[in-house]
Length: 266
Image (cartoon, rainbow, N blue to C red):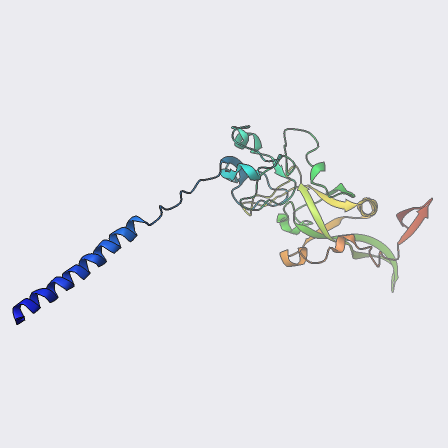
C-alpha cells in the first residue's frame, strides 16, 4: 500500500470520528428537557402604608398605597381594592391608633376615623386619662411642643416665709411629673412633621387617674410649665408610671376606703 492510499484512509477515519461526535451532540441537545413553567400564585391588591406612620399621625393620600398581596395570605382585617375601591379616600384623614411600618397592611383596627366621635379616646393607653392644662408659649417650650412629644410638668407656687425683714413671698418650683405624653395641643392631635409649631392655649396630657388628680389640684395653686424632653430621653424608661418620691412638704397622701388621693396643705 502506497503512501497516498494510507493518507486517504487516515483522513476517512478522522472524518468519520468527527461525524460521530457531531451526531452525538445533536442527539444530546434534543434530549434536554424543557424548562419548567413558572406559575404565579393569584394575588389581590391590599391597602398598605406607603411610609412609616407613627401613632397619632393623620393618614394622607401619600401615606397609603395599593400593593399586590398573595390571596393565600390575606387576612380578614385587610382592606382590598376589590372590596373597597375607594378606601384611600375613605381612610384619608384617619388617625393611626398605633405605629404602622412601611409596607404593612392597613386595617380598620389600626386607624380611627375623625368623622366619628370618640376618636381621641381611642388613642389613650388603657388605664390612662386625658387631662387638659392651660399653657402659653412661655410655659410650653416657646410653643415648640407638638402632639406625641414627651414633657416634664413643673409646678410653680408662691409661699410666704419668714425673712430678715419679716414675712416675704418666695417662688418655689418642683417637678411634678416626668415623661408625660402630650395627646393634643388645642384641637390638634397630630404633628405636622416639623412644618409648623403649635401655639396653643391648652395641652391635653395622658395621665393615670392618680396623676390626673395631682395635676388638677396643682393647677389651682399655681401655673404649670411643660418642659420638652429630648427624643432619646423620651424613649428611655417610662418615668411617668413611677410614683413621685417627693411631692413637697405641702403635699400629703390620703387613703380613704382603699382609694389613694393627693391633698395639698398649707
